[in-house]
Image 1 (cartoon, helix red, strand yellow):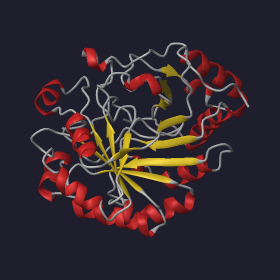
Image 2 (tube, rainbow, N blue to C red):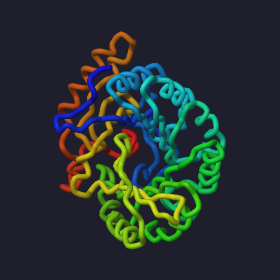
Image 3 (tube, rainbow, N blue to C red):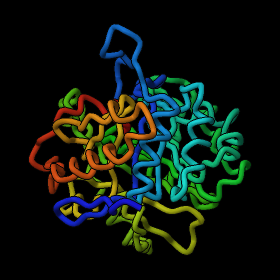
Length: 329
C-alpha cells in the first residue's frame, strides 16, 4: 500500500467525495436557484466508469476507506448503479455512500443497495410540501418521502437527511423534524448555509447559526457522540427517547477544519483540497490507463502539500467555488 494521505498539518485523509456529474434537476435556492446551466457549449465530459475506477483505486491504495458518490444529482447518470458496483468492489473501500435529492430512490434504491451502496444521504429541506417546493423549485416532496421509506425497505439501517438551515424559511420546523425522527432511525443533519461566489444576498438574508439548535438539544438531554476516523464534520447528538439522531454541521465555528479528513474529486477529474479552495489539481491526464497509477498517486500526494489550514469562511473568503454543485458539495 502507498503512503497514507497526510497534509502538512498532519491531518490524515480516509474519506473521498467523488463527484460524477455537476448536473442537477432541482433548483435549490442556496445552490442552483436558476437551475443547472453548463459552463461549456459542448456536452460536458464527466469521468468515465474506467476513470472513476482508476482514481478511486489510487485513493484506496493510500488508505481511503470511504467514498461518497456525489453530484450535482449523481443518480442522473445512467450508469449510476454501475458506478456504485465499481467503487464497492475496490479492495480497501468498506463504505460506499451517496448524497441524493431522492427523486429516483423509490424506484432504484434496492438496486443501489444490491450493487454495494452502504450509506445514503437524502436532501430534505422541509417537511412541509409547500416549503419544500419553495426551496427546491420542484414539487417532489412525496416522491422523496416514498424514496426514504424504500431505503429502509431495501435494508439500510439508517438514512441521513441533509437539511440546510434557512432563516425565515425552514428555521421554524425544528419541532416537526424532531417529532419525525422520534420513531425513525434517521440522522437529521442541519447544515449551516455557506456563502459561495454566486449567493451573497441570499447568505446575508438567510444565514442562521446552528448554535441555537445545539443549545436547545443540550438543554433537552441530547448527548454528543464520539466521532469516527472517517466520519464527516457533523457534531452528532443522540437522546435515549429518540430512535433518530441530530447532526450539526457548522463550518463557521472555530477549529471546524482542524479535523478535516476528506478530499474531493470533481466530475471532470480535478482534485480539490477544500470545498472553498482556490483551484483544483488536474488528474485526468493520468486516468487514461492503469499503468499511470504511481504517477497519479504521486501527484495526489504532492497536491496535499498545498492544502491550507482552513477554508477561511469566517473571514468572508469563499474561494472560487461558484456553487455547491460544481464540485460535489
